[in-house]
Image (cartoon, rainbow, N blue to C red):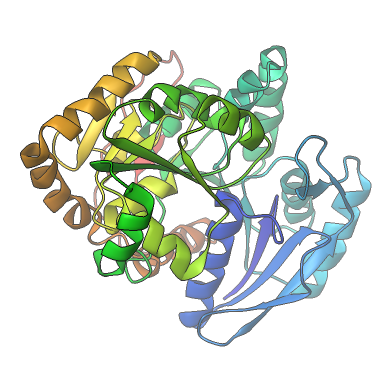
Length: 398
């Protein structure tokens, strides 16, 4: 099968959209399919999958997103649709996959329609929540209107979580099905836990608590300041971003590692006793899965994607509300009850068993085949309840 993966953002940027496209490309190539990536210019002309297959990357004229250094996005306007149409005509894909579509995704959706190629859109970024964190909430209705137009140009929208699926339905987007994200249980594994690294980070403290992600307003990292002041707790901030300097000022005792990747990230994540994720606008939250696969329990905001991943007092804890003092108290309670923490830690890795990228990509291919009209055996899917007066069909993929 020839598959065009239209990525709203791509390398050299590092984010959830980029990582997901890379993993899907890996698994599609491993399964014998031929993926081609269409992305904003600035990316390499090809990438090599883990299996050694070269995947072509077609660059589309782009510009740097203001305030987000290093993040290239498609130039607005109709010219992009013509460029993408020409690329798709050359590729002749069986299906078009739109990863977190907005501007380039819109061009891809129109191009697919023009060429009568079925398209699947992947909802991945809560842009309205993103805008709120940047004090641009007034633009939220316009964003949803734009997203609705893009997604409803495609045959199917895939949402990463039940909460996100309900949100999409409420905004008139459909049909929607649930397609989660895989996790690399080889790369993220308790075997990477290093006592030497733990000692170097902990010092004389008792519990190593970490955050992993972009240091940006939408991640609400400032809510971790009370945790950084707790006795016996060492906070580690893994990642980089525009808020790093401010966060270092308000959390002078925290350790800031900067951006980590590869084995360094695996070792630092496995070294933690607890991961804290305060973001309230996560459509999925891949880092939660990576922590759990590393044998690290999680405290996460009780909203969005983490609701599907964190089971309260089983593999972690859900924090309800925006009060950072409550969040700090929850961390303090873990420090004071190491027996309970150990029990929850044992459940962390088993809770993500069966979530490999190979399994998730096989589900994705099933979605492709169905929008292409290829008959596939199907199992019953429960329907998500809705209070909307004119509900759109939402089915949860098994």
